[in-house]
Image (tube, rainbow, N blue to C red; front, side):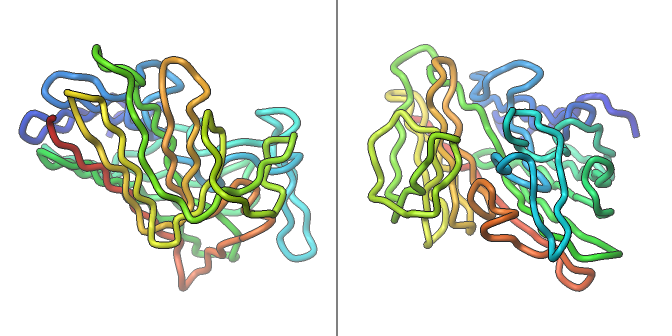
Length: 262
């Protein structure tokens, strides 16, 4: 199948999926209103096989140190899959499944599968990383850019994290957990009961970002958009909290966004 954009519809919701642009969700319209920031680098992109920054672009796997390209100097950021073209495995009216084979500069062979499933009031994104060969550390996450403003008041963010990862001058967690601080944020939070963040555009729409994962990065330092990023570990997690992908055990994660009109 081609890399052309795919449109999914359910009720008055419409999602654009862009296999050729990093497997990202390019847009989410509810009742004609676009919720995601538009542009080639925006929408909602998959972060895989790692999330956020890797310190100096280096991670250790056993005795081997691997170097990733420093695409956010002095660090490597957000994985490699968002820069590649994905393959369409199947597509229906309200669901699409995409795959991406891990290639250089990632040093291990593996396959990522992403399912995008739409209902009239929810979008569910599911990703899995599997290997048929050697085991390796990996992370899964999503990086949505929600429009700060939909034509009325700015969005409000509500969430109750158990802790905030203290952030060093290098934008990476220091390893210490602190009491959550007020924003603006480019910070990782722990939610052991699962990610649960509510975005409210007053008088317009409420949208909940949920995931069984317990890590969420909130980034709201830009004027146009706010990002709520559920992920399977903290930034630099390949070094500090690796999750192993093995031939017997893929790494899987899901996030569901549900919305209602106000």
